[in-house]
Image 1: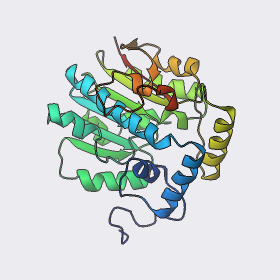
Image 2: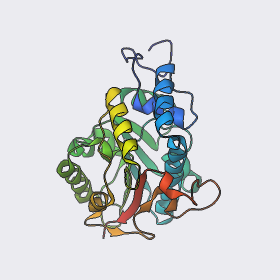
Image 3: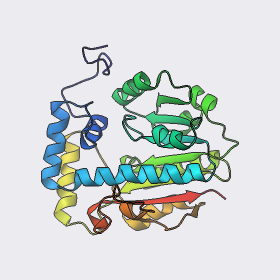
Length: 270
């Protein structure tokens, strides 16, 4: 390990890292100057970015509470990032301390940190995996050990599908996951969009993401809605992220939901 005990040896600290940038936006401490500088530059272009991150984290809380209340006792969170404060297992375990959670992320930094803080929790694990290859995730030994796919699962794909650039492949990924989970399972998706945004915001953010080596495909509503084919959409339907079953003052931007550049929804597999 390096002198930063949560960063594995060999990980580059000379370029921004998406997981650490997200941690910084949430107010965490597992980030570096290069990550903070990248986020600060993005917030010059899109000042609502941090509020949007808070709204997405609040959506996660509401979704997990809803799915647990439906009797689901296991979650597969793909593209989880670092399992920092307020993540799935913390929310679920307030209601059911034996809920099983598997976090999956492509980022070595996120996985190394996750394994460090989760090592003594028998109900939670984290693996490295690429959403673009869902079969590898489903067949991973730790996933197969932790998740019983004959029983309902809470499948979380939050702010991750927009990293799959090809639409057809993105839909195929979701279909593969849908076919693997049992009836009564739930899927929750939050996805970036430029719907109703100024054209220059799309152009500037896309260019900036590419500058930092990250390519994204923020989809309009019509394409977002196709991810839910084969699912029964849970009320209130597919909406801006803050508007999915808000619970209270922790749920930011209820009066101006369009400031969160993303769609959200939950579906149930019949």
